[in-house]
Image (tube, rainbow, N blue to C red; front, side):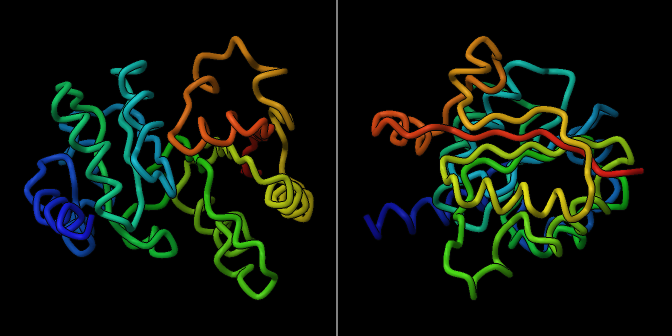
Length: 217
């Protein structure tokens, strides 16, 4: 396992669809033009893990650009390799810590952000690491266009409720909300995309929460 992880870390550094740490900073403000070579909208998947959502969205929407962001390179390798093997050129990956997102994207550069099954950081002292705390939400608002959309998909009911509390504190408009995606949106082709971990949760009978919201102006 350790040997395979090391091999993936080495190989991912050669992938044309991946940028790691400092090498991603020069693309701030020019991701569409310089990385994707187009002027299409950009959608981020944060805490993307193996990048299943990014790759699947890229397949469905060739006129949009998708960037999966995570710090674990051996996981990013899976999605990046899949995109390369299938010739999906509108999907890329960025290996960074998400708290540094404003170092890599310009104000208003992003059209949508997906957060898919993040670590809920359930222990109270770890609130600063929760990806929907007020500090993180402020960063997302900065890089999103004024009408940009946020999506959260999570199996963790506590994290879902926590996020709803933060949205209420900021008085943000909620566009869609459910505590059971496959009951309420079973025909939605985007929400029906399943990650590796989501399949495990569903096999255990866990409900999947989803919320779609935006920032005020």
